[in-house]
Length: 271
Ligand SMILES: *[C@@H]1O[C@H](CO)[C@@H](O)[C@H](O)[C@H]1NC(C)=O
Image (cartoon, rainbow, N blue to C red; front, side, top):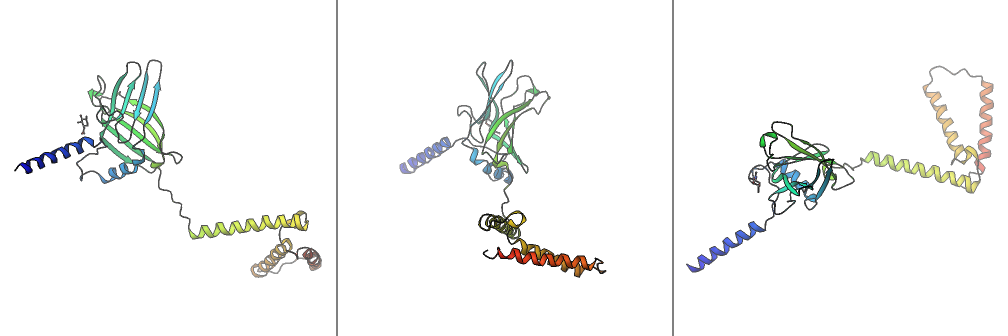
C-alpha cells in the first residue's frame, strides 16, 4: 500500500517536471492528431528558423517601435506564448502582437504565410479584438532567414485588423529541380568538346604552326572541303532542276580550290 502510494507520487512528480520543462511551441488549430497535415508540414519546414530571433525598428517623428519575432518560440519567456512583440522604446511598454499557441500557416509557390493570432486586445480600435500578426516569408535562395521588416499595420477596420511583416528565407523557395536530363548532359558534353577542339586547335595553329587569318582554325581546309562536299550533296539531292551556271567559271573555281587545299594540307600534317 505504502509502496503504491509513493510510486504514484513519483509518477506525478515526473509528469509535472516534464510538463514544466517542455518549452512552449507553436500550436496549430486542433488537438494533436486532428491538426492539419499541411500546416504540420509547413511547421516542420520552418524548423531551421526556430532558434533564430528577428528584429526590426520603425522610427518616425512621433513613434519609435521595435518588433521582435521568433518562429515557434517565445520572444520573452516571461510573456506566455509571445511569438511577435512590439516594444515601444519611448515608454518601454511591451505589447504581444501574436502568440505561438495560435499559429496558422499557408504557402504558395514562392512564399509561406505565418499568422500568429491571440495578441493583446486593441484598446479602442478594431472593436477591441485581439491583435494579429501576418508574416509573409518570401523565397530568397541567398539566405536562411533575413530581411525582417514591418510593412504595415491595418487598424482602420471595424474588425479583423492585422500587422503585416516580411521575411526572406530559402525555406520558402520551391524545391530545386537540378536533375539534368540525359539529352542536356550529352549536349553540354558535346558543346564542351567542340569548344576545346576549336580553342585548342586555334592555339596550336597559331603558336606551333604559325598560321594566320582563317587558317588558324583547326583543320580549316578539311572543314572547308566538308562544307563544300555537303553543299554539293545538298545541291545534288535537293535541287529539282539542273543548275545553269557557266561551266567554265565553275571549273576554274574547283581547280583553284583543289590546288589550294593541297598546299595548305602540308603544314597541317603534324596535327
Ligand atoms: C494562448 O496562450 C495565452 C496566454 O498564455 C492564453 O491566454 C490563450 O488562451 C491561449 N490561446 C490558445 C488558442 O490556446
